[in-house]
Image (tube, rainbow over all chains, first blue to last red):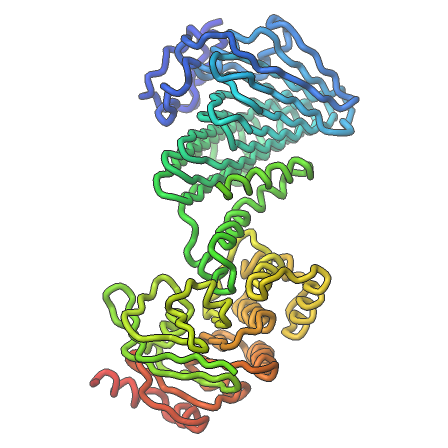
Length: 374
Length: 250
């Protein structure tokens, strides 16, 4: 397959399934300049030895069909074409894919949980998941990444007409894991997509959630929460491509950073193409920097090619804990550590409320607690 | 019986000296009004005593029942029995009033109140100040009007029951109804036990509702005149002009 170009946008110009179509990144490219390539363990330049393992375990709702398929399955790769070298490498290299299908007009009675468990960061593994939600169906999906791995994958969410998919993706890796992942949601007419990304673990995680729309009425909420500790590089690169009229998107990512060389990167690209009249979009990133030595890069890009939008905006801010907040709480007798905990909880509170699965919300809450106790 | 004793207090913000030797003693059972023009250092006194990091105490002492408050962290001062009702209470996003108050009560009393008792206490406290019960679930001070913020400060005062309360321009920006509700709260607090009040204000209006025992006039970073309630009447009639010109020439 040859190179496709999308001349309308200056963002994400290339797309190809073939890794050979992408030169090995040097770190000077716009899309790679924040990522420490040396820590990718060869995922970006073809030197990663593919002997590692990530075990995929699916605990499905009874209404949901789960298959493990070979790489030539015709359903794969239809919603999305890789747009960078690691994504293309994963697409060229995976052996088996997991396909989850929510049948037409079916509401799954409980969440479908896909656990991806890494068995070691010594060698690389590649994966592919397709979640297909058929017309008017509804499902909740959890992607739970654990253990240790050097892992690159592509995850496709095909949300058909009138369907609803809610996804929670938890990156709860061990400290030495490397994970480069692309999540792409393609929304049909009046489809609803809710993504909640929680990234806590790993040495380097680079997750790129993207959304495209095939018909009007699509509605996407992309929410993210991350907590970066000393030495970690956690990068989230969002792309929402409004190419049809009257769709909505909202991106809200919040992170806290603490410790030496803790590094968060957030890139929020939203394109509103000329034909996407009536688009309503907003993106926001906030970073709370808790200690010296931590660094957050936050780059929102809003590219608007039509004058007829319903709403379009972005905001980005990175700052320290507000001394006035801490003073106010301490002036009421609350000790500093507790005051700090309350303010950080408050920072994440509105996001956590969006996780509608109580056990999962508890798990994320206690993970945040554990981070604060470090 | 408690005593807040401020001796020869000098306070600076950066290189600029704001307080230039303040002496003041507040005992429980007493209400002191500090009055003065804008910029005279009244609020600096309140924040310095509470321990706001922006203010540097360059010399002097502040003792609460003989213990040196200046040696304590902000939260330790509060737990020792000092309360500051703020002029501009900050919004704390994502922290509900209920969660905030419960944390504060737990810290000050040294043990968490039972949930049922806390709910009861909170409800009666809010009722007394005509605060909508729905506020308990709202984020602390977020989207509150000026009057709602001040009522919320007085709610904290009544729940935390400090030994000495410093009220920093609690009356500013209130309409007459809100002023009356807030003053009643302060008066309930005064009547509730062995408590002292240091009421900082620019205007004499609140003194019609909360009667002071002593009035101190503040100008140029120190107390320039002291007297009984009659001093407030004099200020009402004559304003601060005499003091501002005196401070400027001092």
